[in-house]
Length: 86
Image 1 (cartoon, one colour):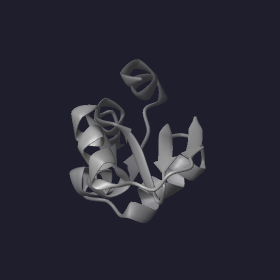
Image 2: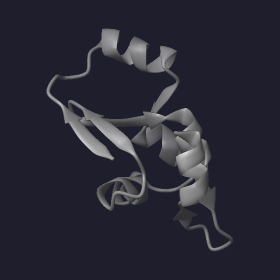
Image 3: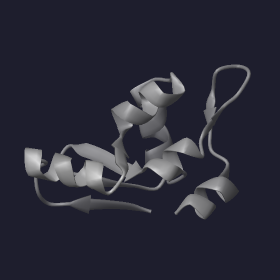
């Protein structure tokens, strides 16, 4: 599910994100060694649950870790693993 919140991220929000064990699109891309664009595509397609806070998209770390990279280097979503992580 994709939701949009109407406030810009601040340092205070960034600290809350860390405490809640959330990650940004950039962090997910770095974790799986894929482009930010690919992660964003999965969010836009509704396959990766994320929330937009200002200009940043965030998601639970457990959801990000449920993603897998195939032998061809493509990032894919295991829907059952993502649902279990939510």
